Length: 480
Image (cartoon, rainbow, N blue to C red; front, side, top):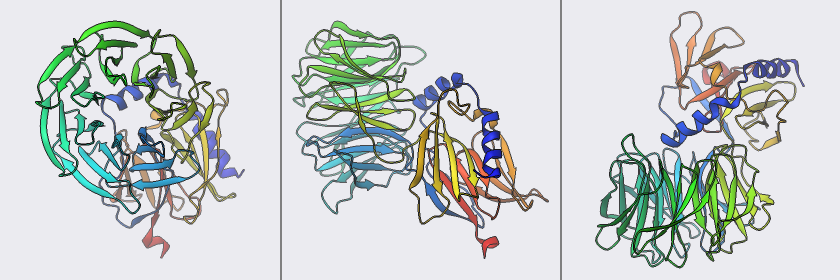
């Protein structure tokens, strides 16, 4: 390892904080998820030479035919084959992070919803692409569902509405006013006649579950039982039961026909973010802030499997349609696929990372090294022709590099090796490059950052972004 790298990593180690602030970071992301995809700025003479990493992921779902796992992230939606051996495609078009994805019942189309306030419909057939961009929401959109007959798409937004769309015509059918709370989830009943929506709580009221008549758009029932926000809902495949997951750590079971609370199926110590019945209805999967995903008996509420492979809070779960595997998604920016009956890790795909909080150049080895919030170190080749990681390792808890946050290092600045320019990050993560002598702004780089590093031998600047990627910028004037 070169001297420059040793010095940089030593500086990184000195800036590491405890993980006490991570809870605040996670909740901040949940309440107001940040996209940090492109941003705006006058880049001046600087040009992005390459981007490293596939970015953090925010949503996932299996296709009904079991062929694909769709993973929505900060750049778009990745399609992975169900065996995870290779990717099946990539849909890009959203300008900010994708917060939910849902397949049509026949797996021929996919809907994605985003922080950019749009709903987009995609053609899954070979050579297919975007079919519709549906606009109308006035705040980020975080939930999507397809009706069982494929005739409607439901989208839920922080603007407090649920919107029903015609996926063929690409038109709005109706708007459902969910009240004061942000909509967190939407699900159609198995027969398609009813829609359930969940909302986060407000300062004045707890969250709730609402049941809607799909044909008329009228509210059928309002279900209250959680203390605090309601994060997700799931219908039993038979349609006679509905589960709701709450920040109070409980799974409540409801009888949709009468709106009666049947029982508290599960009580946990941590916030529950998601819930999903297994395809046969015999089990339930949950996602928790504690960093664990679990499966439970749908009849007794007894815990069946606890999956502890994530390094951050888990906020999405999805069953494979055969019921033998579960995919879970974490605030550490990664997703895992694991065996439903044993909890054994099956695999993952793509270089999906948590916040990158430290970056350095290893000139001797010609590498760019980063450290992530969840305690991983990744190294890429410094050449734009090769953006596949050379290696990635998990760091031991006592290594001094685990559990970094990087938040204590902002604002920060670094002078270029020739002393002519200063790159700085303010507390909000904005990056500016100024003339070291005059202070004049030369460039404002897009995205929000946690760390940066100049290459010791040329004009390149590596910027570690909060979306789980590294952007490498080069001064075209200097390099001419």
